[in-house]
Length: 131
Image 1 (cartoon, rainbow, N blue to C red):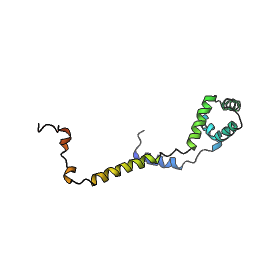
Image 2 (cartoon, rainbow, N blue to C red):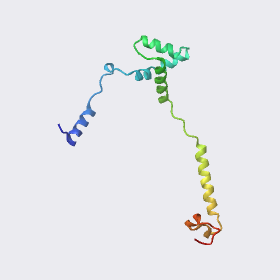
Image 3 (tube, rainbow, N blue to C red):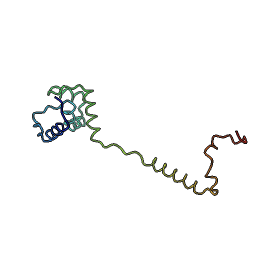
């Protein structure tokens, strides 16, 4: 069955109008489960539980995870919550300042002919009269 663009447009509209499946019928994967439980896991850690103990307890409750996997999933869940740090502005300001200084030095040049150099002159040897 070959679909036309019109068929695809109709399918697209139908897909947009489909209702979301009931949440209680969905089964989250392990990473989503850790993401949902991240706050409580962190609280348990603050109370003195180790990752190994928490992983073992969760395994007994039906969430089959080993400690390294739990630690990895927890780090991913917490990384998404934290905003990324902004780059230091000092570098950009310094770069702008040095550019501004360079433009001022060019504009202060007393001889306009010094600014209009032959582009080939940089490649020519100045100690020889000509090639």
